[in-house]
Image 1 (tube, rainbow, N blue to C red):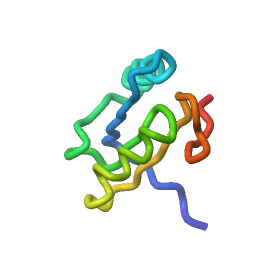
Image 2: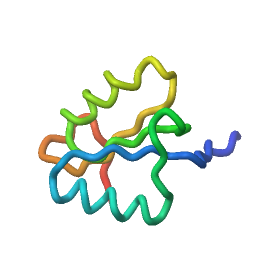
Image 3: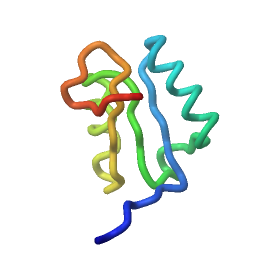
Image 4: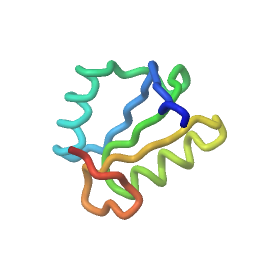
Length: 81
């Protein structure tokens, strides 16, 4: 059994919505926030629109991209708790 990957440099991107901005502040305080070019992983905080935009912008990097639902539509996103 392999252990989960631990990312030390995380880039958070967030939509302009209040929930996403609150999550951005909370997660930045806990984990810091790197520029996407310097990060090991990119985390999108918002809805499906932001996730698609983030995938389009960073798909060429080969970095993992995760989405946390903090927007209106979140079919592509993981639950945020």
